[in-house]
Amino acid sequence: MVDLRWPSSRADLAKLQSARKRRAVELALRAPFFRDRLKGINLDRLDEPEVWAKIPVLTKDQLRGIPAEQFHEQFCTAPRRDVVEYWRSGGVTGRPLFYPRSAEDMDWSILCFRRAFEVIGATPDDMAHVSFPLGIHPVAHLYARAGEDLGIGTIWCGSGSNTPSLTQLELIRDLKPSIWCGMGSYGIHLANLAEANGFDLAGSSVQKIIVAAEPLSPAKRQKLERSWGATVSDQFGMTEGALVSVQAPGEDGLRMWTDLFFCEVVDEATGAPVPDGEIGALVITALTNNNVTPFLRWYSGDLISIQPGEGGDKPCSLFPVMRHARRTVGFFKVRGVNINHNELEDLMFYNASITDFKAEVYNSEGGLDVLRLLIEPKRGLDVEDLRRSIGAGVMRTFEVTPEIAFLESGTLGKEFEASIKAARFVDKRG
Image (tube, rainbow, N blue to C red; front, side, top):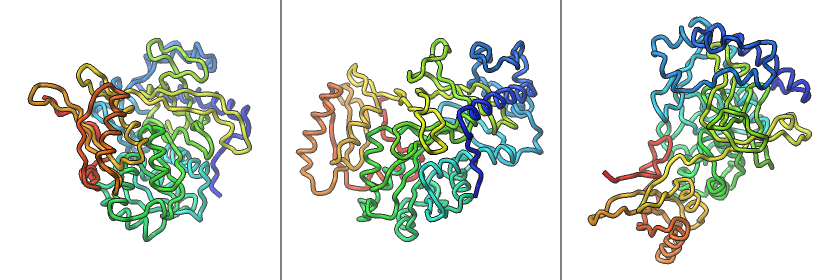
């Protein structure tokens, strides 16, 4: 059996965390980048919150300020000969970064993903279909490697740009995996494509769904579970760490691996710690997979809350519970009204009559902003009744009357096919 290295008690967890925090700072002191940042930090008092808080928060913009050709020499703590692979950061908000990992880093990182399968009850009797994008971003191959370590059969498909989505549906039909792993938006795309092609995905072999790499709203969860006929486990990680937290069956939060990552929640404006259960910015320190890149007090950009675990009879019950608070990552301003993308997505996906949708904003010939909703309806519905229902819902929520156009089933799926993340919100104004 693979050793998942669970802490034996809360006291054991606290002891591990304390020792690993000190080691994380000692490793960081090897890197020129950190030497001035860590001057005056008392290594013997790191468990005192006011001492730990003296370590400056690390941001992606600070790392981008290091020239690429100097990144290893300035930021890393081990020679290049120790590097076995590189991970690509997301790069959503700027130039992506590439982080080296040692063999020991990989062992610890894969451990996080092994725990994820353990928590959802996966066994060697399962087979996992992996639809996360395959490439230099690590998430897909980490799920697949971890599954193989546990004796779980794996199907390394990648996203639709790696293996066409229709082929993926054929593999689900023919190979009968019991677990599907991928981004929630791609899971919805596969479900819509299945319906358009007459494949009963809800009646397929898939019983468990793992989603990660983007926030999961209650509406997305509901649509995924309805479309696939499977239970969803939300999981959360980042390239600067690994898989940090996992939702166990029957729980509405995610258990955080605080023996592997020291997690803080701070006020976005002041950097001060916030009380348990209140929302703030996540600051995270890698405690074990930090042998080349010392991510010390990394500002992840996520808004979360953390509460102590309530206990239980499973190894993960020792860990605190995280809840992700979705950011206002985007909005349209239409005739002076802010239309939050998350709220609009929830409104659409909660409606069981809608298979898929896309939202656009454009300028009419008269110069007015127009919100246009492109809707794929369930087959056999009265679309005029649906038009009135959707229009009334948008008006009630946002006080804007939308233009609504209905599309043939599968139209948006073809458009989204090659995308890692579906472009559901498009501003066409000049």
